[in-house]
Image: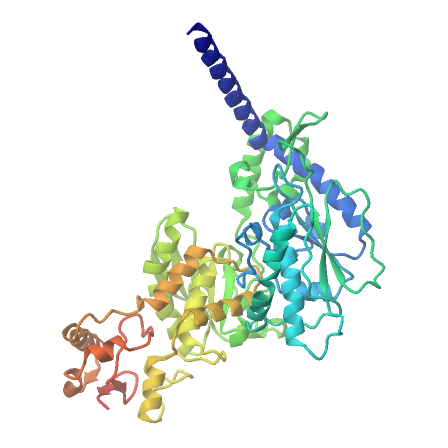
Amino acid sequence: MIEIAHASHKNMSITLYDKKGLAEIRKESLDIYNRIHSIAEDALFVEQVAEQYDGYPIIPNLRCGAWYVSPGLGAGRFAYFKSTDGHFNNWSFNLRRPNVHLLPIIAGNPGIIIVDSTRAGKRMPDALSKTIPIWCAVMNKAIAKKFPSAIPHDWETNLFTPPASVSRQEHCQIEKRIEEWAEALAESEYELPLLAKPVRPIWVDQSTTVLPTFSGSQGFTPLICLSASKQIEDGLERREHGFTYVQGSGDDHELWGRGLNPDIFWSSRSTLLATARGDLESVIDGLIDRHASREGKLADPCWTSTLKPVHAISGRLLLAVASELPDSSPPPASATFKCVSRRLAFVLISSHTHGHTVEVDGDLPYHHTLRMSLPASVSAHSNFLLYNILPRAIPFIRKHLIAGENVCVACPTGKDVGPGVIVAALSLFFGDDGDPRYGGDTDNKGGTAWKASTSSRLKAFLGPKIDKATIRKRLQWIISSNPSVNPSRNTLKRVNEFLMSHLHHPHYASPSSASHLLVSNAQARGWTLNPASVQKISMRNCASIPSLYVEGTIRYSPPFIVTSGVTTPEIASE
C-alpha cells in the first residue's frame, strides 16, 4: 500500500510539473514581445530570399503572411489561399477564393513569391504545401480548357506537391479531383488570361540550403512558396538577444496582438523593436489609439480609388470601405473613373454600437444616403443583416437604380456585409447577362409599365428566378471586380436565406391571408384592384411563384398582372 501511495504521489507530482511547464510554454508563446521580435527575424529571412529572386513580386498570403512582408516589398499585392482548403480529406478549390487576380502578375513577371508561415511541428502551412499546388494544377487545366487551340502540346497540367509534406496516397487522392475543379473554374464568371507558360509551385523554407534558380528557358513559370518561419520541434527557441523565438508568430494575432495588426506593425516597426519588454504593451495601446483616431481622415479626396464598381453591370453598384469615403465633395466625372459620373446614392453601414437606420437626403452633398449601424457584437452581425439591413437596403437600392442613379454600398471592411448586400441586389435586380431587371411595375429604365404581351409583363413583374447558381454567379462578379472581397459563410447564408426563403416579401399562408395582404397593401399605396381577380387567388398559384422584392412590402402572384402605370396600377386577372 505504501509503495502504491508513493507511486501515486510521484505521478501526481509529474502531472503538476507537466502542467506548469505547458502553462509556461503557452505564456511565452503568447508574449507579444517574443512575437514581434520573432516576426522581425523571419521578415529578414524573407527579404534575403527576395534579393535572390530579382524581378519576382513578393505577395503575402493573408492574413498571416502580411506580418512578414514589408509594404515596400508587398506593394499592396496580396493572395488569399486558406490552409483549410488543403486539410486532409477537405481538399478544395474554392470559387469564393479563386485568386485569379494573380494571373496577370504571373503573366507579366518571370515568377512570383507567395509568403506564409505556420506554427510548431510543420515546415510549411497546408496553404503552401497543398492549397497552392491545387490552385496551380486547376489553373493550368482550366486555361487548357479555355484555350485548347492556343496552348502548346506539352502544356503541363500535372499536380505537384512536396513529398516531405504530402504522402503519395494523399497526392493521388487530390489529383483525382483536379478535373472537376478545373471544369467548374472554366465554366465560372472569372476571366482567365492565356498564360505563356503553365505555373508550377516550388517550395523554400529556412531549412533550404541551396535556393533553386531559373534561367527563364524552363517550360513553366515558378511560383515560389516561401514558408517564413523556422521549424522548431516544440515551437519555441531561446535567443541570445533576450527573447524566445516563436514559430509562426504572425498566426492568429487576435490571441496575442492587443489590437496590433500588420499595418501598424510595419508603420511603427522601429519603435516597437526598440521598446523594452515592460513598456511594450502601453506603447502598443498608444499606437492603436492614434491609428483609430486617424481612421476616416485618410479618405481619398479625389474619389479615384475608394469606390470599387462591379464591372459586370457597368458600375451601377459600387463597393467601398465606409471610413475611406470623403465627408464632402461629390465624385468628379473623371476619365479615370467614369462610372461615378452619374449621381450616387449611398448605403453606409458603420460599426457603431447601436443598430439604427436613418435615410437622409443630402447627407453627402448632392447625394441620398441610407445610414445603418451594426451591433457591437460581431456574432450578431449575420442576423442583423438578415432582419434589419437587407429589408431596408434592398428597396432603397431599387428606388435609386430606377431613378437612374448608381448606388455605393460601404461597410466597415468592404469585404463582408457590404458585398452581402450587393449580392442580394444583383440577384434581384440584374439578369445573368448583367442587364437591369428591376421588376415591379416599372420598365428597366425606370419608366411606367411598358407595352408588351400579358405573359411578358407578368414575367417581368415576377422578376428573375433566383437559386444558388444565381447567387454564386453574382458573388463571382463582385470578386472579379474586387479580389479582396471575402464575405463570411454566415453572411452568405443570411443572404441566401433572404433570397431563397422569401423573407423579402410576406409569405402567403392561405388564400384568405393572401387576399387580405394584397388588398391592404394596394390600399396603402392608393392602387385599385379588380375585385373579381382578388377572389381568384389560389393556394396553387401562390405557392408556385418565384421570389422578387417589390418595394420591401409585398409580391403579387398569378393571376394578377400590372396593366397600367406606377402610381395607380390596376391589377387584373388574365
